[in-house]
Length: 373
Figure 1: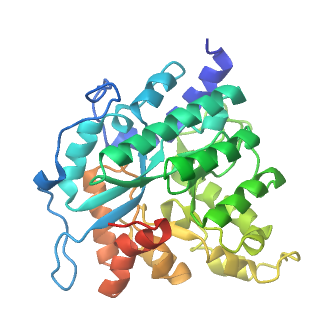
Figure 2: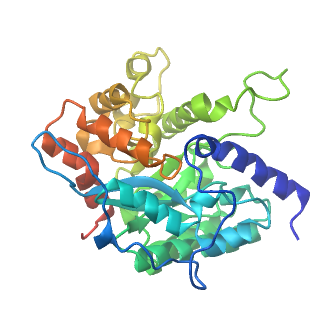
Figure 3: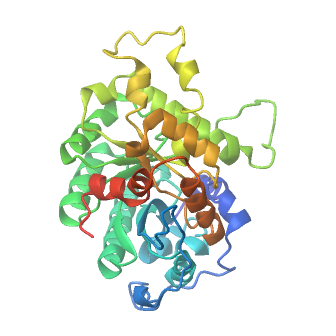
């Protein structure tokens, strides 16, 4: 039996986490599970796709692209989650997902679990069970649809760190997942909290990345006297700042110096960090515990391209981190096929060599995730 506190917390995260989804991509009013007990579909053979793809400057068509940051909710996990809060159909209906993917040419996806964060569930035992169910579902989809999904990340019960470490090992060793996804804060705790250091140490040993997704905070407000925020501004403006703050806490506390193999992939092109790079670099505030300037650690993060087709935004990020640290990511299915095409267009409009563009579209992901395609 789910108590009202759990339900309110999950509903709050869903209402904010699906903000862009409601305005760009609707899969319909009801969620139809895919075929079979597992909820997986047999339709849409990849060889039958008719997507129009894109064109690079040298005239090459339909180059393979690996979308590093897409969201999904496996069917069994969705069924369990719906006892607490409704699951957006776009995140769980594979038939409609595949139809959308078919419009995009030779495009492969890496899966991350859709919101809400599992640790938002107050009961840490329930959180462990949900994490296992979600990770099993992710691995099953990658195994069944290798021509659609080339990898997936693990979700961890971050409110139960001993269990999270065990589930991390299971997810990578047994399920062959390619990293983990965490959020910009863990139940209000910053990502440089001491309790998360064992997780970072293990991830640096695995040499696999950590995806960081921005998070809205139900108890955080910019205007304390305001009862209700205006127009869900937090996902629009607050999320990039949440990403930037998480990056600053990680870099400023020396996490990347302590664990040099640790890799973080940031959503939405690193929030505002590339834009504010000079402000950060010339800040009068010192980070005395660091052995190098904080800006150097910030440049070690990886940045996806999910900025709604904004070429100037991507160019700014590229000037900060270079093509080796940019990864094609779209926020699909929160970004619909037309928006994904805008992201592709914006990358192709960047003043880069075709080799650098291919690094962004696929090669960096191949290298980081050790993909054999």
